[in-house]
Amino acid sequence: MASLSSKPRNFGAYSHYYATPCTRTHQIGALFLVVSTFFLTRLFDQCYSVTPAIDLHRTYSSAVTSDDGVLRWPERGYGSHLSLKMYVYDENEIDGLKELMYGRDGSVKTAACLKGQWGSQVKIHKLLMESKFRTSKKEEADLFFVPAYVKCVRMLGGLSDKEINQTYVKVLSRMPYFRRSGGRDHIFVFPSGAGAHLFRSWSTFINRSIILTPEGDRTDKKDTTAFNTWKDIIIPGNVDDAMTRNGRPDVLPLPLSKRKYLANYLGRAQGKAGRLKLIDLSKQYPDKLECPDLKFSGTEKFGRTTYFEHLRNAKFCLAPRGESSWTLRFYESFFVECVPVLLSDHAELPFQNVIDYAQVSIKWPSSRIGAELLDYLASVPDRDIEGMIARGRKIRCLFVYGPDSAPCSAVKGILWELQRKVRHFQQSTETFWLHNGSFVNRELVHFSSWRPPMPLP
Image (cartoon, rainbow, N blue to C red):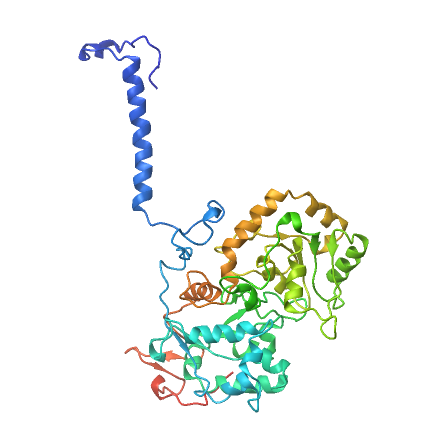
């Protein structure tokens, strides 16, 4: 590299070509030109390259929305825009669907099924019915949605476990398109901790289908899990509409300085080790950890407003596992701006390609629930808590079951995830094709002539 000293360098035999010696000014100018060229080249490369999705790890201040409020999804693997055609089966179209939605005698009301943890099963169906991505033509559909409210129907006595199983099998046998793909392009929602195990024979009949569920792992309860990372999608829990609706929620967050407790846990013990540890811990440190005895009946029953007023009164909301690994409290915490602390080792979280959960929550080993946990939470500076709350405020729209026309909603996030699952070529063990592109079954009957009931495994 050229010297930056003030004395001109002697280039020997070649010096006679230069009328003017190379001064310090020339050398500084040359260096400036090299540096400028480098940065301009980088700038043009960035301007003319495909703009990637926002990296939440690096530019988290923008969260998942741009300045115009539009949701940005990672382009790699998803595409630059949503382009889906989804067929939603009508309840009168397939014999048995009505039973899966309203029970054997039709006595289960949709309004009752909108509440509680299973409400997402109804909401997703209703929102897809209104979606601009819905098509009325099966032949052009990328995906098929099968509506069913079986968790609610079962809880309200509309169908027994045996009846649910039999009815699902009957429904599937009347769907030629399900048979064509082996179920790979069909979508089912199972919104509770039981996941697809609500359909006892799921592993035989829908093991290739796309399952939407908040439950990612059941191997602690079952021999096999119904969740497959490669095809299934984790969805958020159903937070009460009064807390997620636009405008003013029923219960507003409190400033950190006005919160009475360091942490809280609002839930029943259910005989679960982690929950029992928290309840015992609250008795040792009542000034730091609140674990109220939740009443679900009688004069001391916790209403919705009372529940969220307690939830907002701590800096950290503890979310241990219950009957299964997922927990609704994790999602509820974002709407009272309390930092969720996940105490469920096997929990899976939705939309991990756009949300960096380490920026908006804490995950702590369930085996280390004790005074050590409270000491750690007490050591977190308020400025860091405020930062996590602010970032959580930007991404919680992904936990709201709103229409896909909204800039950010759970359904829009689900559609982005579904777009990755689309297979444009469909096949199954009972689907065959010929030289002219026609699809036939084992008897060489053309697909258009397949008639229900279809043979199933």
